[in-house]
Length: 492
Image (tube, rainbow, N blue to C red; front, top):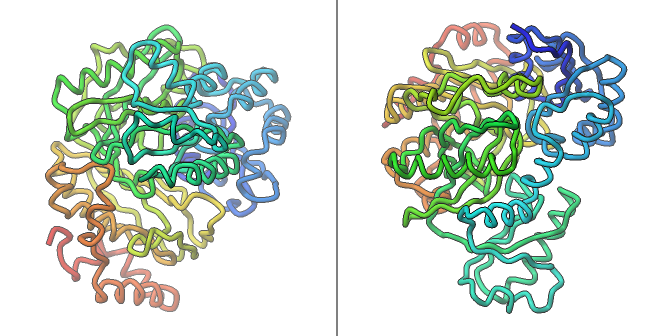
């Protein structure tokens, strides 16, 4: 089965680029991968129908070069571009430039990106239509009256960048004395990362959850595909997501999901998108932002609904109407996703570098491993530290937690330190198991999320050294389902 697209360029890298490639292959659409020299051996480059090297002052700069990407599209007669997430995925100028070249942007319209991608304008838009928005004030970082402007808002407050994302340009302010200096730092960081120094101040809820709702629209109708729980975060960035949320009852679930669909409907939204909310301990929820792209954590929704969201994006962009009606949506079981990152999670989440000597992916029923990793890949700080995503699906949340712990034990990655042990520590924590957590979980339980034993750390180092020098060790690793089983069951 195929759409009217003949050839699609994937304007990204890593695991999400490979994920989009597989969707294109399933739809029998030819693919073009673009890559920086450092990614020349990556799976997406090896498997795409065509691959073109891009250049720039840095790897990220190459992926942000609109004119270079559009020129490749024109030269190779590309019909459409899938931006994945990050880089140019929420860049209205990129979408307009493609449109001017008669190339389809697989995502929402430039107008929708501008409206919903800007946190200040989107909040005003949502509030004007009667949806709940957290109390906030737009501020200029140099305004000498900034403290007076927030006089009616109790501290602590959170400063956010209007064009921000991924925790960039966000800071907590605990007192009036800190406000102006924090505003200036946040505005400077926002201008550096997003080219937009506008910031706003929002009421900070010390005990709240991060709930987001997946939506699909075709420009005429919008449906939701349920919610995701995204409260396990570090530095305002998610590391564990699950669906459905253990916090919501059926009435709350219906309310928050219908609000998300209503917001997207009001925006005339077309494509996949995510509406994010803050859910308080009092049972209130407030609109935070809308991500006008596919999300990192979209697989948990796919696992419980059976719907391929990337294929849905492509079909909608090709002009096909939504094939699914809201009343047809059914969910099954529970899914959890863990983000595998190159970082020292027990030492302030500092980024780690290295070289991938060996990778053994977990396998089994209900296990999905989304990765763009390859042997001898050099892991640097040029890109985001997320290396891969491990997703499990099971009949119940408890079974999903157990399956994720076991899958993380099966996972072997030698050559670079990751947060795998930290993720297992979170999964073992009683509060996580009970579903009793909020966005402050990692800070609240920092002393309880202990590092691995010296025995386990020593084993990992020994395996890495042995792998490099001994072929028999490589064969043993390939043949062993759970190489760390001798250390003890993960649930102990």
